[in-house]
Length: 80
Image 1 (spheres, rainbow, N blue to C red):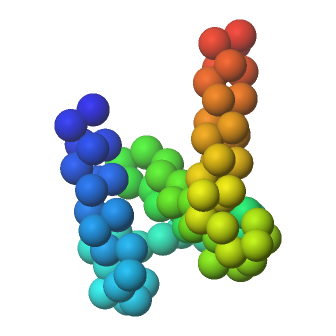
Image 2 (image 1 turned 180 degrees about the vertical axis):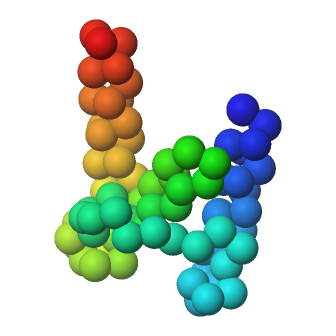
């Protein structure tokens, strides 16, 4: 858990840097609605910002959708 928090703090603190200057580089694993995605030590981070305008450029809406996706994923993993 410590590592995940540390990586998350790095990703958040570098949100406005150009991708070439970021410590943890975003990865292209498909989709734009979930925002930028990062994989570090097999941990997937989705940084939900609406830079494409899918939700009317509302970062709040993008975060709400990402939260709902996380809830669905958790429910599915509990059933497995």
